[in-house]
Image (cartoon, rainbow, N blue to C red):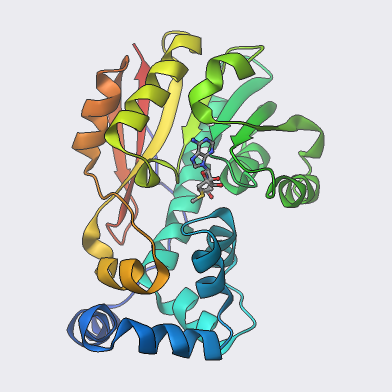
Length: 277
Ligand SMILES: C[S@@+](CC[C@H](N)C(=O)[O-])C[C@H]1O[C@@H](n2cnc3c(N)ncnc32)[C@H](O)[C@@H]1O
């Protein structure tokens, strides 16, 4: 069988760039330069990535800036093109979209219903829907509705505008939001902002509305990016790092199994596929 990541065009950094980051840049930004100096420099340089994180740490706008990789400000070009997390995010976007497109194509009926939790504008699901050969439709849920107009626009541009619907709500109330059972549940980009208890409560709620054999897609994050201290003290971003094994145990207790973990090449994220058992 074709591997989940086959033909995905990943970004990679070479050994010299990796050594410079690990030996010089990461120690500087993690510990040696005071956080106030770094914040002042980013403010002076009008960094949109820093601004969006200060306003909403880890929110959807900073994802969009990292995904697009095209920035107006020099500071952002550096952060987004050379930063370990933005690069890993772009790899996760491509891998997640490929995995979900394959799940759509293997569902065996149409339209395939994708439920996206903590969707933001839904970039990854929109990519997957336009890559898949089978017809799909998506329900995209987020606490905040401020990403929905942008989401509708990118869905239109991708040719799937009439097949997405956005719902504002807490994903823990997912039972009340569904009029039809999902074939694929996507939880990429949300677990790292939640506690173990919250993840279990969401997984239990989702398991209740999912038929046996249907797929859930989520991601782990590990500290291989080497910038956790920088992200905490400068961006105010407190992500919970968990191994694929830890997440499989949490979701396993909520009714999921048959997990497959697929790493992106920087080793920061694994995309994990599980099944309702
Ligand atoms: C980091 S963004 C990720 C967006 C998108 N999943 C992606 O990977 O590009 C996390 C999103 O989860 C949403 N979120 C966090 N907790 C939530 C909850 N309990 N219910 C619904 N949405 C939530 C936030 O509003 C935010 O838009």
